[in-house]
Image (cartoon, rainbow, N blue to C red):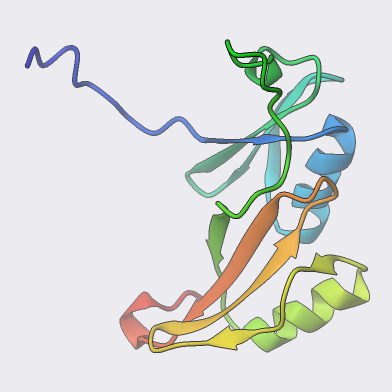
Length: 137
């Protein structure tokens, strides 16, 4: 295969939202993202380290209906996973801020996790690994 055709790199992950300003405020106020760019009311991008999250509102080109007419909507089970330290403390802080949780904290062989939702119902998983070499903070 031609090398130019296979030249991919990650640009970001796109979430569909109904209110771009509200979504950007959620990610910056509660999850530590930084606002990178916004073109209200259609679009904003927020970043956390090297990760870029694209927030597309109803007027954005990335939110237009698919060729079969199916509309793109927030929600689902695919999710961004954020690596955190001290998960119980993070949970308490987010609960105090009124953030919506999808489940209770779960523990498995690799670590502990819980899912929160942004204001449009897009899931975000907070994950604290058990292995010392995978920890942050």
